[in-house]
Length: 342
Image (cartoon, rainbow, N blue to C red; front, side):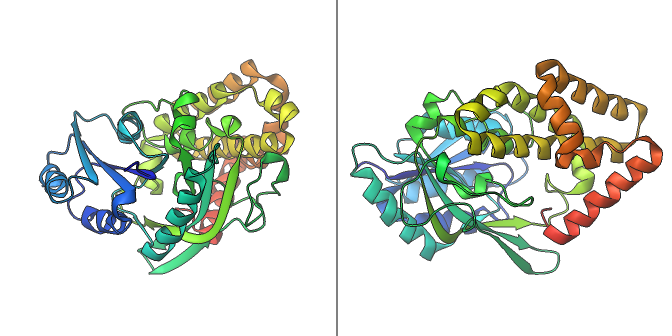
């Protein structure tokens, strides 16, 4: 039986929480393939847990044991080995809503019968905040039409806090391979490349207003924790540079104006985050990196540089002087409290 969707689950020392994730995916039954990528785990029983699931569910679960390559290489390995028509990444500390999953699978089965299945399925995701036991649903009813296949010319405007994240997308596997996606090894924050680089290759989409993905957030060691992000800011900068290189934004804006507008705003958000965490670091080296990042964008496209630095959301990270940098950080932290994005 052809699998409808492959779920790739990168696992790194995940024994404390991966069972919950995998059990929700197993509720999809024989239509799903689950690829557990053990990314060189050495501190707990993650490798044994992966093998146990493969033994119990040999027609559903595959296991790949690899030397540590980071989250991106886990995604790459899943994609290389996926046999499902569609491909979705689920982090090992997150999970899927099982009722929503059944509805999504039913729709994907419909697409599988078409001569040209849609390239991208989009669903809502839910922030599960561990520190205060609250939830925040990120939905797209203001952006995407419902109940129909659509293209980029039919989308609305995204709000400032509203982006497509890895949690919200299910790509057609062969489209994802055809676009040449290859995430860098040993680098955090590569999920931003995953939801940016393939987009111009997406021609057809479908949105379901379902809260499918549950994003667990608030652990002290998570990559989106502020202190952790400051410590890994060089990797944030690396990802942002790769996104600058991924596409000619002005060409995208000309050919697909609404997609181009969204991608411009997403890249501006990445420039802002990189700049803010370099400012929080505050060392001469970090402030020099901030200047170099903006100069790199200028060298690639001076018009995009001027528009992004002075007129987009990223302008808040470019207030001049020491007091301007303090204001930038205060505004970022205020936005974080309001939108609860990490």
